[in-house]
Image (cartoon, rainbow, N blue to C red; front, side):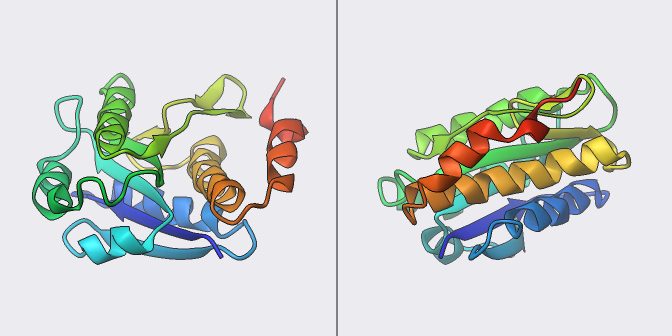
Length: 185
């Protein structure tokens, strides 16, 4: 059974709404167990428990929030080398489009890579001209179907990769590659 942890920071509740949608998506993959934790409640034991980690941040000056940075520096710092090889992804909400949320996702992915996480991009389109290559991003709260589905698809893809690499469910790899809903005309 794959274990997915979703850790997020939020000030306005927008990133929390995204986190709940990411959790919904992860639960689409049969046998996935999900924990949803605000960064102030997350522990190193939660991260050790997880096979996959989705990290959500409000966009602050184009990068991660200070609470998430502190979590990685102070809480997970002592796990250096112990969490190597887990699977990770990112999502972010910003005050407006062009607010730096893809850069914030890249900041999260860079942090995860430094801890040895395997990170991934999502090639799927969840709407016309709507992708989540670096993670799910929204301006404000997720309102449109495309924004909500981007969050769900990120969680689903994380759970699929956990199922493939941790649980050995290689048949999901072909499903991922051949799913016609990945592309929207």
